[in-house]
Picture 1 (cartoon, one colour):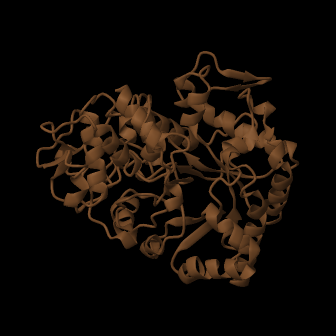
Picture 2: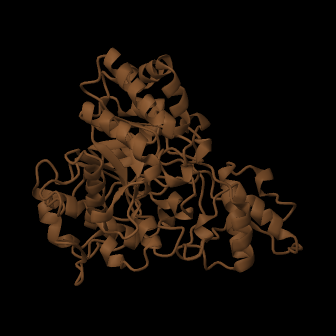
Picture 3: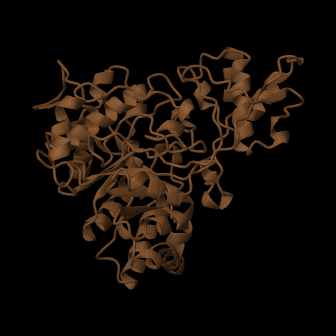
Length: 487
């Protein structure tokens, strides 16, 4: 967004100044085992070259995990030295599992072509394919797909440089009590998990777990926010002889217990995702996200490990996420679209050490915005039938900022309708007909933003620059109608 429309950054999180000398003095940086996730589920993504040259390199990001293989992103990462993990979407699991030729072609097109100039570390097969909500849909294809990818890497003489991993959601193991000692893999995934763990062990690959602390916080009302934000607790969670004063360590040890119960107690662990949203729900704010990220990175910098693995932190931890994604799947909640450390247009929302140490984050320069025009409701028209237009705008746009507790939840009517109209208008490149809404829309050059509720301006981007992951779209028109009538 133009500089005069940026929200002010929250102040440094409590305790941050005490650890800045540690972060600045370490060589390499204390956060060297930390990377960031870079997703592509955005209607208007920043060009990949701009992300790499304007965000990753200026902020000294050491490693990045791509949600999927993007030729633009891989080309932009060539020669940078940034370590790269490439994702394989769930939709590709079946064809890759069914055909060694398909796996060989995927490796050739997305890995071998770039291997001389891109520093590949991992291929992440699947996008949380064992998630409870998926049922058995992807399970039969996970291990065969991973095995075929491994064979293709071996044939390309890359298997010693690149490891194959499978991202596993936190609900892959069951732990209703939140005590790590009670964790074990779900019975319905036990057979497949045994095959996967054997595959990983035979190839010296780590176990990758995806953590969603915000979802856990929503689901466990008995645990305080301090527990998730690495704040000192007077009453840590006790699990036998072990004590846990933060969610992250407890989650890692839950994974360790699940692995131990499955017979793989020594397997390394990678955290493929850990972050906190800044919008879309109550307690999803830049200030709280900054507190979480600062606590996490400082905790990792100490390399203290966990009660079950003292002095042995996860091999790597990937912060979630680099940029907001307005087309990301909302199955867990609208907040999923607001996990970015940066806004969709590359402007920092808060301080986080993603490699640059105590210095402020550098924003993406020279962002090309559309003209300063917005679409709002025409108050001079008959608005008795506006609900249908509101629902249509939100179903085909992104109204998550209107969710209860979110940044625009206080707009009320008809401000919430204007927000919906404008979001649809911007997603459709400000075309005049996208502000029609049966004659109820009005194009204005007066910024309708109110306090922290910013009405976005689209950025100019080529459609070819985006993967447009349509599988990430999750339409909930009934939900938007509820927001309309409840405000």
